[in-house]
Image (cartoon, rainbow over all chains, first blue to last red; front, side, top):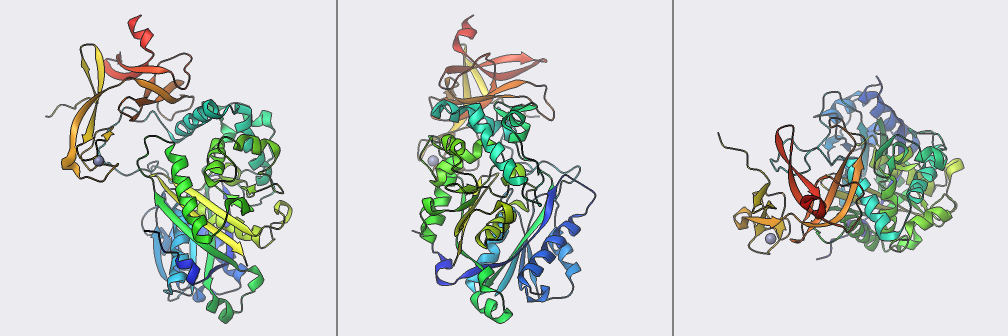
Length: 384
Length: 125
Ligand SMILES: [Zn+2]
């Protein structure tokens, strides 16, 4: 049975975005990070905290009750708060919950917040103990999983190490124009290929920096936009939300299959052809992922993505701008904020407010995240 | 005290892996668990211990240069076994390539037997 697209019947709009820059771990508390993003989003939407009815706080590292503890400092309000954990897709899932609250009529105005920072002594994620032992215990860390995907991709398509590295060159160039990015330095191919080698084809600059930061996006109904006097020109409609759990697929690349299915579900719901996507923010924690997911999303044929990157098809101003924010590779991946930050970038692009990293005439955007488990969460946004 | 069962077993010089097989859909699952079949959803009562040969082809591999605890570099492999299951483990091979035949072997490292993937010819030699 096809899933119901609640966003077709009731329109939901992103009306405010805010960020705290992504950065290396520092002494700044998560409360300061989070409140900076929330206040920036309120100010962007030109509404008050008391106008927000429900809040979803995505994080994976800072522990129980982090969301509610932080939001008390915004003063008294009738807001309902819930913390959302879904690994790297925590922020994307918080956004999905906020969107669905408005679509269902539970709230007229809701906020999705992502905030996170490294916590000393905390485990590197993963459930406590499901007691399933394997042969590769401890041997395969995330980057070696993706290094294996890179090796396989090169064997299947004939792509070269240099071609894979060019994804990082492109995304660092984009990040250099994003004041919220953790890495704001353009890099040459030589710099990207230079040691330290991390695993297989992957060098340090082809792996995402995991630091700290925050992002917030406020969503609202049509009625709320009218009532609060929000500028319709700056409201961006959310036309689809899809989320899936990975299935057992022993005969194909499980990561690509999960992205293909989730994206297809979202694009179908929004009635959008992948070729019509203008801006895409995807989970490029490792350079190889952009190639795999660009193909899985349907931006190009199987095995063609490396050539697309080389030709500039995925540059800002190209056929589709992929990761104009710099992506996880350059903007960074503070975990909880990342999925919300992607939505912030797409809203900025579709409003035509992205300054010197603006993709010309951007009308339709797609945000894609994956998280350990594995889960995949995809949203489609459109300028109306 | 129950002895920790290894994930492999040697039978007349051949290393088999200890997985489970679903008696409802026939899928072979590795590593073994007693929770339910990921392929069809059958509950744990449908999962039976199943030994399958560790030999297969290299689906992929990589050299790990950075690890928080282990000594590097080392190689890991993802192997497609004849039971259609993807199995990951340590790889000992100078110049591996995707699609190449490999098989399981057991090597004693620091007094502890460990499972590794090797190329068949190296075992005979
Ligand atoms: Zn089954």
